[in-house]
Image 1 (cartoon, chains in turn red, brown):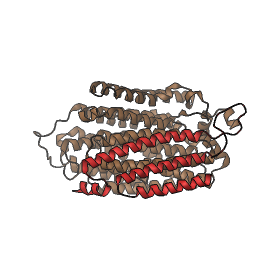
Image 2 (cartoon, chains in turn green, brown; image 1 turned 135 degrees about the vertical axis):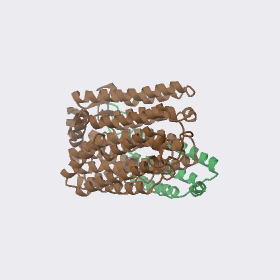
Image 3 (cartoon, each protein chain N blue to C red; image 1 turned 45 degrees about the vertical axis):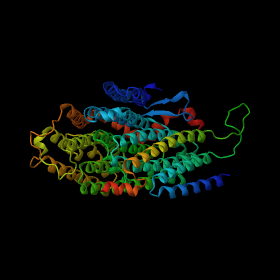
Image 4 (spheres, chains in turn green, orange; image 1 turned 120 degrees about the vertical axis):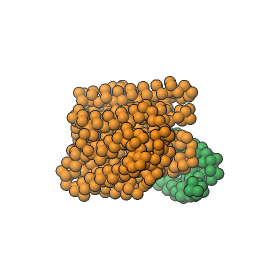
Length: 112
Length: 498
């Protein structure tokens, strides 16, 4: 199971890198979003998958999943949500100011 | 245990939240934001004095004993930086009051500056790697907002690059955290140190440490500084000064902390890579500073050179060099803020930013000219000012470590710093005055006051180096001997149980 998820992370990173290398704002932003999903999956995998019951401490609880990675991911998701929202607004603002939706056009415009 | 340890983060954070409700009352915003930063600096000094008598302080949030909860750890190094950051921010705020303009004040510029300070102080104080990531993000989100305030085209475009790079850096940070957790099963810095020592720093941990190095060097501008000059020269002077003084220092702090506390077992790999990166940074920064003609670009490249200089001291890896680095970080915060403010004032007074276009400013604004001159001398390391003591100790440490190449590069780079700033001084302040005394813009005293204050501060650090010495020595000795830090965080029981 861990191997499969790790491979999935690899595929996600590959897609994200491809998107990040393009010049279009929206593609870059989608790239960062996919990138952060990949890392969240990786953190989850690092805690170990399928280890037993819910992370609740009881008297006779023997095996339970590691709760820490989930807590970490929750925080990381909130942060990446905020950053993605900010980037989208910024891209829209650049479009409103310059009429360009990719880095090449913006650069050309500011050179003139 | 002391609750005061959270105040340098809590005060700016709460004040910023309160201030968002008073968008249109500028006077209240100014007074409260200044009080918040000044009191954070006060708390920093108080804690610094307490550390000298009581040893390293710590605060376990919610009463969860380490290694289980999140905690703040205050040692001399962290609190020296907290105090310096809060002091410099309050002086920059003074400058912002008279220059930033109503449109910025309306768009929450002071709350954002306070959020930035909260993130910076949190990064200095935290004792948990994931919490360090969160504090970094608080700081970065505030810096994104500050960078685009004003909404000029160049700012927006620079901001897009800056944010994308930082998202990528944050991704690597999370990657390193995930691997570290997978390899050691903990994220508490002290427990990490214990576990890495016990199991030995094998190849896997060294690779993880290199990912951390990549992250922190992106933040600090160590070798990976390509994003820095562009984004530091886009925003107004007060905000650029805040960036130049604080942001790279957080990266430097995190780098020094992680590599002295946790990953200090294979210095032949990590230290030497940091040394090489620092050397290349010095060379690249010097070339950049000499080749630019824009005042802000030259000053931004000087930030890069300073990062290289500080980390050369760290790469030497002995106590004297570390003391030098610590002195130099403190000095650099003050002087970089001063340079950015003076440079920004020159640009706003003349409306021009290239060094060929301005001349003879010394006749119009003599005080500004001499203040710039002081900043230049201090940065080069001329004795009565603060740069001197750091450079001397760093030189001693490098000789002790017998790393003569780094020594040469570090001190040759000082000459380039001098030359690049002297070029601004000779071109812009000397020579024929281009502005006649009738049409010159009046320079208000309260605009100049913050730069004077920073000038006094650099002189005070230089002359009062003896007063600072016990704190700096304590900070360096804690860094060299991580056992002190570990014992302060993990109690004996926890150490036995592990």
